[in-house]
Length: 252
Image 1 (spheres, one colour):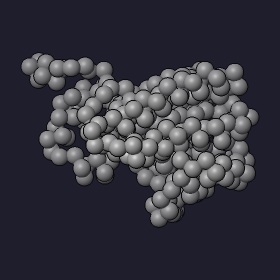
Image 2 (cartoon, rainbow, N blue to C red; image 1 turned 30 degrees about the vertical axis):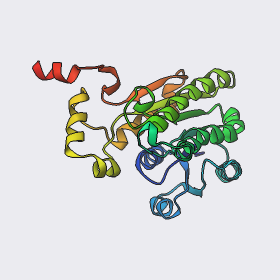
Image 3 (cartoon, rainbow, N blue to C red; image 1 turned 180 degrees about the horizontal axis):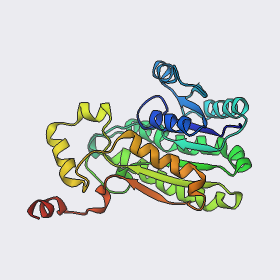
């Protein structure tokens, strides 16, 4: 059986690793891209049908080499998941240009560079792109001037990709995760923050990495063959609630 090939960036942990494992579950092979060498080696250990590739997605030459390696060794590219990202939260006044660029070069430049490098192979396979943005790209929040702006730009980039690549049969969609119960989030979120999120989310809980990954897998599958240019918030209803709803729900 010829296996389809997916490229997943930021594949060493979190949503990227969860997505990799679900692709493998469904019979795909995965080129796992990450710049964290020890984490990537640990994540890939014991997994079959994976190709770990060390690459910083903000570096054009490194991206070109990584995509060429993935295409040559895997025989093509059927799906690209642009998941690599960094988070740097701070007030606008304390976000200097160095911090701004550090976020933009991975969260936005990386999506552009990897997509562009993979485009010929995706056109050949009529493949799909799924970009991972964030609920912070859909609604503003404090301390997220660089992060939120980068993710909002990824949303617009996705629409551009869908508009321009559709004639080649290439679909492009965007997933915006809401609060996700990752090890990092649980380590830095105080009990007060966790309680506030639970109150603000209609489903009254954080999401899981697998729940986000299932949406990504669907968008890369034939089941979503007529879905492109869509921005999907996988967030338990967080983006839809507006202002004041938690208090109203509490009274109800």
